[in-house]
Image (cartoon, rainbow, N blue to C red; front, top):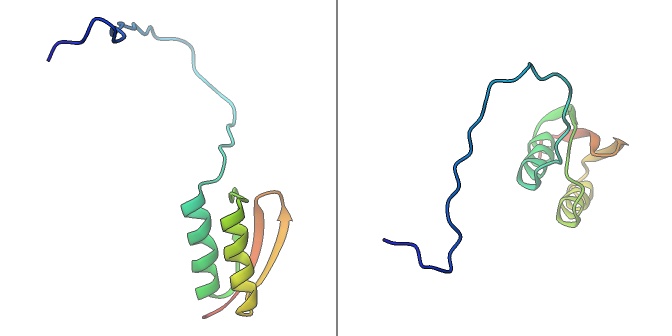
Amino acid sequence: MQPSSDSPSAETAVGRPGGALAGRLRVPGDKSISHRAFLISALAVGESRAEGCLESDDVLATQACLRALGVEIRRTAPGAYRIHGRGI
């Protein structure tokens, strides 16, 4: 298959070895993993901690549903929670 004349052409990139990298990187939370963290913590008996959670509307709605079922969820910092599961 030949690219059309109006499609972008591929370019070649050449990488060269550099120095070592050091530091920290905090990436935004993932919605699916955030949901799972709350659901699995609710299924457990006792306290769980979840950090790096995405605080989207649907994740917050999941928290509200779990609270209605008796799960204690406490926000300790942005994206960080302590969940006291009830074994539901």
